[in-house]
Image (cartoon, helix red, strand yellow):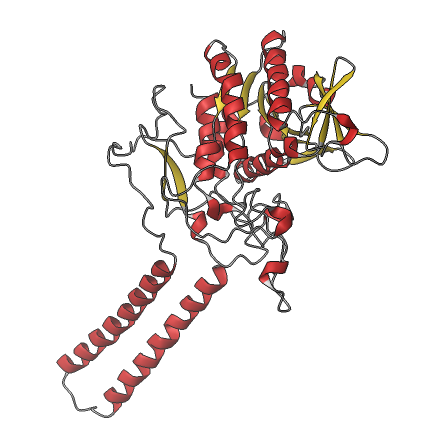
Length: 430
């Protein structure tokens, strides 16, 4: 994008010089004109030059024009220019994606912390319009994320994200935004580079991501690919650190769809996707997910340590025609229109479980809130890496159908950056 801008700007003076030379040629062939004519020629030269500059500017701006809004909430009040926090009565999670010509708060050039798989611009994604939208709740204005204000609010605090690779995707988005104000230091990572700890030294702010895709204890035994889930034991990787945290964002999701064997009270009680093996009853992924979330809820409720806890709801994928391992793809370049599509059954079931377990609990708790990003995320099928999870995936004439797509994680920068707007509003301003 920067190269294109440079080329256009370089081309403008050339055109201007050419016209000036033409005017000078005309001037030399009429040397006997009066002083008034000379002034007129000078005026014309400058007029032509500035007209060319203005025309070039117009084409530069036009080439990056954000498309018109997909849909407009007619009952939405005008945005508040004050930047104040939203009304506590406003539903932050019901709204629309509206055009945002200001674009993202960072780029793949200004943030070195983007994982390669989500670095869509670097990997050659050709379209950029997916970068120029922001989330707008229908009943209020949502302040744009302010890195300096956020860092001031969390001075001397510790903020943790607990979950799977989407949690990692989210924390990288937050780091990219914050690092525009203060560079971050990575002070720890595990052997697999899945769990990490960072520090913003001048604010003494610590940020963690803890790899715990099931939130409960899990293991693989022997040569079997089946995952053993202990539905009455939380994963100590995060519970043992819980007392350190001031703010916690917990999330679950797609890992519960894997083939799993359920253990409760030292007994195998069932399975999911086990194809009748071991003579076990297939209780379904919703069974293990509900059991897990209830265990998490009770832990948060009963713990003597009371950080402010958010549970982020499930992230829908946008694979079309098939799943990720069967040629599914995502090539949309615009947000969904309202009611244009429906959640997949899997995502709808998982969100129903989450709401059933946590919604009422949040109302009676002073340190627990729900971060219901499912709906706003579902409207952004254009925000995934798709085939651009690797650099230039079609180089060498590769057939599109042979290139695996990622329609679950999010490009950085991309729609996931708006999660931080609603997260901060939910956890710090309400």
